[in-house]
Length: 327
Image (cartoon, rainbow, N blue to C red; front, side, top):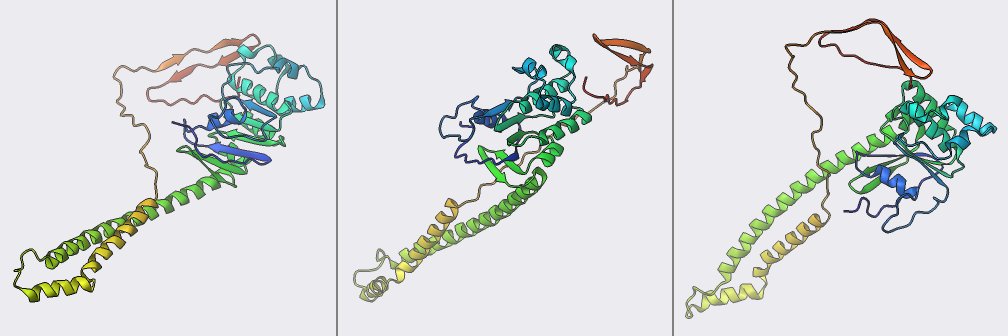
């Protein structure tokens, strides 16, 4: 089954976002534009100078050393925008995923590309780093295409929204939240129209059945099967009815109703199925759960970093949130 069919998209200068459920083809679309994937049919124009910034932060970007050792005003500005430290150059394995993501984005902004494609740029980022990244991406002046589930990022950066769903892409020339509201209104209108159409089809089906019964009764009345050959008056009445076309009226009515039914079915409105999603956990309290006590201490987390912590006690039923800057 193809991921996309009859796809026709245009991207303008500025940021556009591609949104949709997991597995709908968002990342695939980015890889098609970046020429990492090749389409089975169709053409993509205007993507000669592209740069694709992937979602994964496992692999160190190519040309990272060249960027970090470049001392032009542009390189300094980008490193400053994303608050990148010189010590990160040879520390990729020890960097947090948030720090790696900022390095990825720095290199993406440094490369001279007409089209910048970014997949989930705020993954692994804390709130401070996310603000830094948003401000940095605002500085890009070419065609930017963004895939993300981050509403704040989408609404801040994007002026165009593409919703990918069921092998199709629906375009809205507005920011994400507004596009979703418009799309939901459209789906609601579609649902109401579908209900109305189904009601009309049911009425038509009933009318066709009634009319077909009339035709059946009319055929019986017009039949000479049970009329005596000597009953000329009855035979003449049937002949006269047939001659004047009275026996055809009911049949023509059935034909008209069936034609109307066919047209309605051909233009039937297809709506999407709605599924209940989510996870329900039926929790029961354990009988042998004891508080966790952690003594005060210091932990080495990198060559030049330590983590100091006080005495910690976690009681049964407690919910713990751990926050802090990336790295």
